[in-house]
Amino acid sequence: MNICYTLLSDGSSDRALMPVLNWLLKSHCPSCAIDSQWSDLARLPHPPKTLAEKIRTTLDLYPCDLLFIHRDAEKQGYDARREEILTALQNITSPPAICVIPVRMQEAWLLLDEAAIKKAAGNPSAADKLLLPKAGRVEQIPDPKQILFDLLRDASGLTGARLKHLKLHKCVHRLSTLIDDFSLLRGIPAFNRLESELLQTIQTQGWI
Image 1: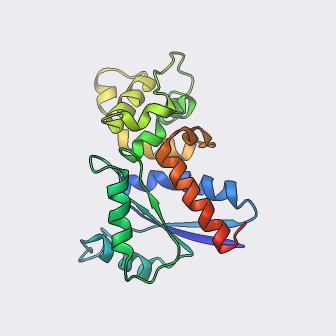
Image 2: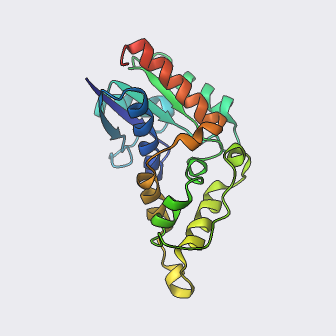
């Protein structure tokens, strides 16, 4: 059986969530082939502006069996972002749609794998240990993106001009592809909600 999903996200950097979604689907649907698409709406001559318009355009251009809709919680909080997504889905004929709402932003879900961070920074044999947050506390970090950038800089071992030229956004995207096991995220409430909602959808659709 084949499952095709589309990720509608806040921006291009949020494609780093796709390895997380792939891992979840493969964990719960091991006998299914997984096809993934990222909704690239910025390339359109007149990109949609409201979330409802983005959803409609995404479904037109990237038809799928399963739609993931991403919004970082940021200062709005998880419940407010979820209500925003559910409101936008009203009156739209959609395949099963699942909210992906990291608290506070998706970089928080990439802070836990030391070996992968070192590889993403181009220094897999770095001897110094990185000071990683505990899984249960990542949602409390005010700026997880800055923390992740700092960890990548530390892991790189670079200094001076070479450190300034380290392409951090590329490192972040590489990092998500280097993590083989996202089970450490099960200590994070927002991730647990995503997995629970996905599992319920899988069962309802008969994909297990």
